[in-house]
Image (cartoon, rainbow, N blue to C red; front, side, top):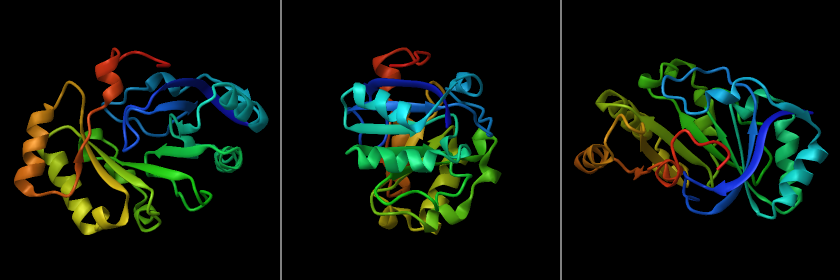
Length: 213
C-alpha cells in the first residue's frame, strides 16, 4: 500500500529524458525541507492505493515512460515492489530521490535520478553518500544550484566521486528565478566541469506553480 498524491501524464521536464511524454507517480511526504522546494503541496495529503491500483492507473494513461517522484518516494517501503511491478509491465522506470535514503533495494532496471542537495538547499548534510557507490550506468545525478558556493560544492562532489564516468549524466540546474542560466553556463565552461546544464523545461512551458502538467 502506498500514499499517492497524484498520477498524471505530462512532458518530462528534467534529466536526459527531457521532452518525452511521461507518467508521473507522485508519492506523498518528504523528510527534507529544501529552501527552494517546488512541491511542498506533496508533503501531506494523498490517498492510499494498492500496487494493483497504481499500476492500473499508470497503464490507463498509455505511456511507457514512468517517473516515481515525490515528496521523497523512498520514504515508503512499498515503492521498491512498485518499481518492479512497473518494470514487469513493460514500463521504463525513472525514480527521482533526494539521495538521503539508500537506493540499495532498487530492482535492476529502475533508473535512479539522485538529487544531491547543495548547501543552499539547507539539507546538504543529510546526503547518504554510499548511494554514489551504487550508481548503475543508466543512473543520473542532479544538482540544483543557487549560487557560486553551491556550484563549487557540486563541482567538488563530481570530481571526488568521478561522477561523469560512473553515471549516465551529471546535471547542473539553476534554481529557477534565482540563478541566471547563462551565469551557470559560464561557470561550467570556465571551470571545465563535466556536467550538463539543465533547465527545468516544464517551468518554461507552463507556469512554475502549475501542478499535474
